[in-house]
Image (tube, rainbow, N blue to C red; front, side):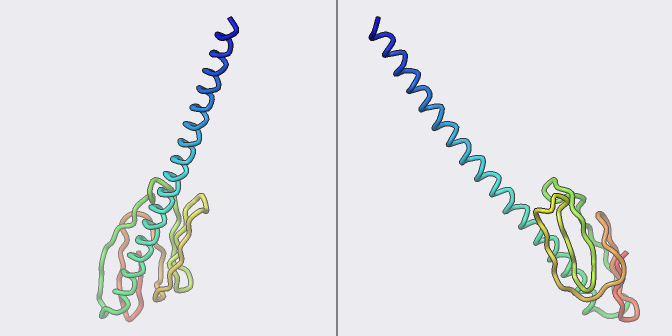
Length: 129
């Protein structure tokens, strides 16, 4: 009977050790997935801010009468965000406050909005929407 009890205890220790290693492995794997997701969100935010900066810079360098429509997505990687033009900068930040970007650009009158945006250059002034 003593050997059975010892075998049961050894089996429980073995199961506990395996369970512990599985939990550690899943934790490490989950951490890497979250890290990759954050990196991807940063890339998308940077690309969007650069695209908007580029649209304004193209309008600034164009002749009067320039008009172009461009789209801004409603969410970034499933996250809500805000976007705006302030004092010669394009500002973009997520609603959770974990990601933000500010890029310098030419002064533009108006505000950016999610969805379709119209950019124009009239009398050397850039108008957005």
